[in-house]
Amino acid sequence: MNEQLREKKSYHHGNLKEALISATLDLIQEKGPTGFTMAEAARSAGVSAAAPYRHFKGREDLIEEVALQGYVLFAEKMESAYARGKPTPLKAFEAVGHAYLDFARTNPGHYIAMFESGVSVSRSPDLNMVVNRAMAVLTQAAEKLFEHLPPNKRPPATMVSHHVWAMSHGVVELFMRGQPGGRAPFSAEELLESGIGIYLRGLGIIPK
Image 1: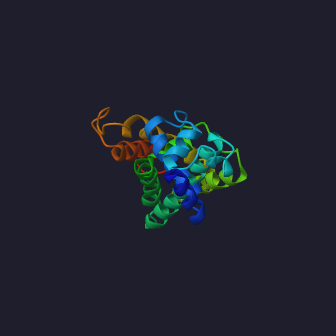
Image 2: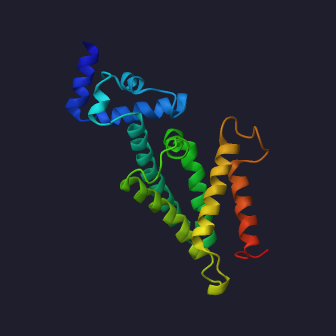
C-alpha cells in the first residue's frame, strides 16, 4: 500500500520521470550503465515495475534521457566557462578544458551515461543537437585562439577541438577516476594544462 501511495504521489506531482532519472543516476554510479534493470530503477524510485514504461520503452531509452540531460548541463557549463575566460583567447580555451574536468567530477552519473554507456549521439535529433552545441563551444574557443595567424597557417578548428576533447576525456578516464594521484603525481588539471600547452606550441599557436 505504501508503494502505491508513493507512486500516486509521484504521478500527482508530475515528478515520476525525474524520480526515475535520479534513481538511474545513482544506479549508474553504483553498477555502471548496463548493470541494472528497469525493475531496479523503478524500485529505487519507489514505484511499481510497470510505471517506468509510461515514459520509457526500456533501459536504453532511460539512459538516453539521462545522457541528454547531462549534455544540456555540460553545454551550459562549457558556455559559462568560455564566457568567464574571455579576457584572452588562451584563458578562455583553458577555462573550457577545466569545465570539462569539473563536469566529470561533479556529475559522474551523467558523464558515464554520456560517454560510457554506448548511447549513440545520432540516436535522436535532440541528443545530436545538444552534443553539437557543446562541441561548438570548444570549436569557437579554438577559432579565437588562432585568429591572429594568417589564414593559411591556421589548423582546422574542428580538428583542434576534437583533439582537446579527446585529451580531456583521456585525462578523466586515466587520472581522475578512483583515488586522485593514484596513477600520476600530478592533478588532472595539471596534466590537461601541460598537455594543451605542448599541443598548442606544437601547432605554433602559442610561442615556445
